[in-house]
Amino acid sequence: MISRLITRIVRIHKKRVNTMTKPKARQRSPQLLLPARVFDATEIGQVIRARRKELGYTQEYVAALMGISPRLMGEIERGRGTVGIQKVLYLATGLGIDFTLSIRGKG
Figure 1: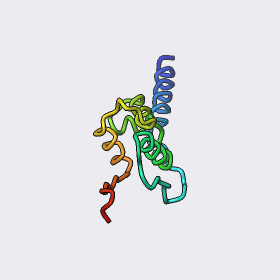
Figure 2: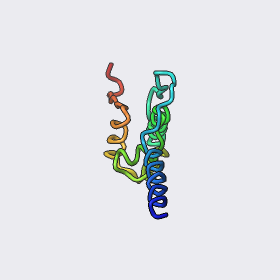
Figure 3: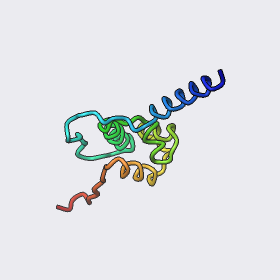
Figure 4: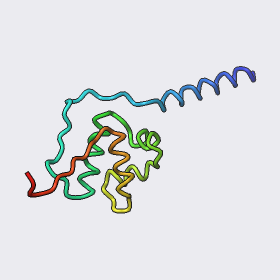
């Protein structure tokens, strides 16, 4: 009786652990459509969200991977002003997004 209960608990635990593994990436077009210029935090958040979805990751998975809370992940994707630029850059780098800066008027 107890051994059956322990076996059942172990199976349930293994099933839960297996569902927390890395989500499978979806097959999509290789090129992510990015805006030509980014004018505010909302647009940066949209790029981060698009890249995350392109990779097939959930907000919870990326947040755990980057060591931030899922709530903060959502705030970054919505472009909330309470998020520090360092965290946004850290997250973008982790998702493989590079930012290129240029000075207007220089060609």
